[in-house]
Length: 370
Image (cartoon, rainbow, N blue to C red; front, side, top):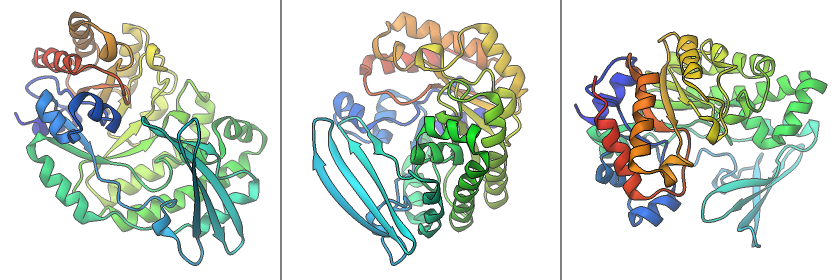
């Protein structure tokens, strides 16, 4: 089978020739350090991985300076400090001003000043422009990947899921407090974000050359919020997004929770997603600790949702021995993959892992035959 055939069969809940083996993207830092700066596609070919490739980032991010217009005027200030390179954004709207700051180092980018600080700030978000995907870039990437794998993408905004997006804008702890103290404001906030995402989907998804689209986020995990909060502030919005995606396209929906899932798997199973990732083990900030936990997740999804993830990229991929890697791949195959519908993948990004361990990871997967 080709990598594309293998991945798509598994993501349809079926059994391919063997266990599909991929990574959840590859960070530029790792590609530079371990692979000589080649692209993710070339690295996947070299290592023998079934590639899952994120589409190029067209300028649909509403904080990109190219979005500046008469209702969402963007100005930036940049400086360097001990943390990295900083960019402070000022967004001037007809009714007020918003500010946020991001910091970037060799590894990644993160928010150091939240966009939404006061309750009324969320009402200024309505002035954000919405620009659709550049479908030409997607088509070019899709053709480049070919049979070597599949193409995935995200959505509109800071993050894909409304709750995750809101946490990025306002702060996770602040959103949890607000969910208890002023739930009406939280729902207003989430509805604003939902409306923008739905409009973006309407503009972008028809005839898009892509396989998977991402939703969710770790701020909605069972190790961050309670099942009750997930049910109220994640589930209804996720349902609407997933229904819209399926109405507008043939894309499969991946629901990503980089954190605890054992207490909320039954809720995720209700949101209409096709695939759940990332099956994070305890060592990676999740809550999957035992074979019983694995069995419970399988039962909750009832064979109706395909699974991706589970491998410890922080410890095993980084510093495990080939034998430890082989044993863990086999354990995951036995626990999640025996009935098909499973793709071996790290539970999230990684920045440090020797090339030799990736090769051992791939070889172990090749030994898991259906």
